[in-house]
Length: 531
Image: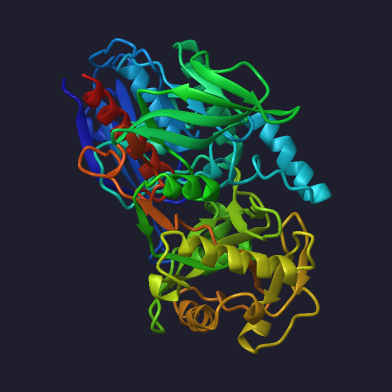
């Protein structure tokens, strides 16, 4: 008997999977040989009748459990000069995986450390306030997403999204991400997934080089021909034209390349600058800035689910406000999570959010941000948005006491323009320390006014959002890339052939899934160009 699919199956909270199997058996009218969940979502519109909604697949006959088939795509002879992938975030990792599918052994470089070393360096920053500008929350194996909630839902509708989820499962993510309506992996599980992907790339003949930064590119006749790398003293690429020691720790190395996938993150400001000097076309891009807002996770649960919140997964939210001229919205909501010290430049304070898979922390946090546009920037430079970010990050650093403590204000005091002097029921999770401050001294007035109106407006839809004890911690400035590195229909830079801007840092994605999908697209474009 062929597989059958049944949708819109509603079950109350507290049910077991066995009850779902019983429903499947009744629908088949007999023996249940095969059963699988294909979709699971939560309907909490009526707090007195919260239900799970399922789509299931089943059959009377047993089905052989088939491992996902990842077909080897048409292969290409390994080029004389390597295909270089710059950055090991989701765009870079998935680009490298797809290049291997095409028979091309990539060379993947990452300015930061491997994830196991990265964890130690980040912890040391929290404790000693010594910032490693090359390995931190922004830079290192896995990219900024490694220290996030690991959300895999996306507003894009790419046909590649399913493949991205299946690939994550292939490398160790929970299988449930294939059917949950809001899949997430959690920072703790993401770290192992990233390590597994690295091991696979190496096993297939690819190369992975950490502590290696793209410093410059060389262009001849409009095409990239080589790159200059700055790396910690270690084994080189094997295709070196010349090598120059910088000091006892670092070496500058020039490497010939056949193509470069530019999968840099949105914090690679020095790379933006060096590319702009070489004539790589880029332009300003709108983004958003603001703060992290923290509530007790239990209060968010009560607001979303009522008395049933203890029986349900940690509640999340997503809010948008048009209460003022600028739009405001919540972003990267982390149930049961932590506000992370995320600076990558000395003398700046940056925040981000993180949750582990269990989402069992005491607080919920989210970015609460307002739109900024090119009209807010000081000039027409493509990097004016970078300077806008940098300015507020430096002010936050000074306001917090010049030791990477973050300026903090209770929501009630923020709305009344008072500096807070004590915490209430919500205590900060920001690991590098906080300092009470007036956030009006940190963020531009239009942003402050927008956030004030938004908090009151959002409270109408999520009761307790404007709780006076909730915390605002600044600044959330790295929500997306402030630039777009322009590319054409072949996905190559409009000004330099063989250079492929890719992912969130280049301005073509927003989040783990869309960045990974763009990495797949760029790898296929590189393969096509080498045929």
